[in-house]
Image 1 (cartoon, rainbow, N blue to C red):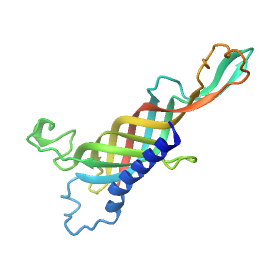
Image 2: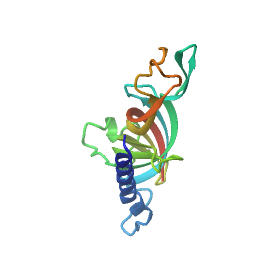
Image 3: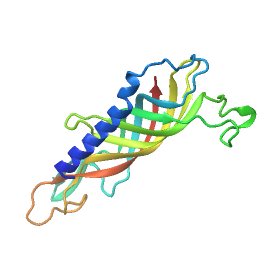
Image 4: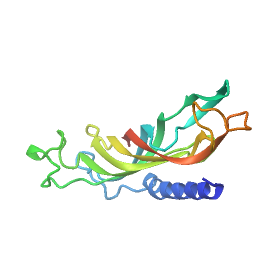
Length: 200
């Protein structure tokens, strides 16, 4: 991925983040109801623990070396735990719809105590302002008699700067003729994202 594309993606992600999260931090509560009756729905944000599984065509390689003329990968990174910041929008389903189980409850939660909807998650990095960005669907449940919720999300994540072996370099194969060291390159790759978050 070239520098221009990376900068454009970073700016778009930052704009999405500030358009959704920042207004929430300064929003008034003049129309809000009491904690006991407030619906879980609407925009929220939280801190998430995520696990990503690489879905790209190439392994993410952190380090490799040449042993007796053969390329040996010493460390890859296809499964990674991550701390991420997420924002989501929950819809609170109608109790007459099929999502509810018997007695107007879903997994023991009454109407307004759970929600489902899309989420966007980001992780910043040491080199890039946004290192990873993910999106998917999230299911949330209110935590007791509070405005907080525990959420479970599943989606995809984009790594715009995955390090893989360079063109012509293949794991467990000899180096191309005329080369003496392992080359790397950066590319964008997709991954599967599973996460749990705490929203407040």
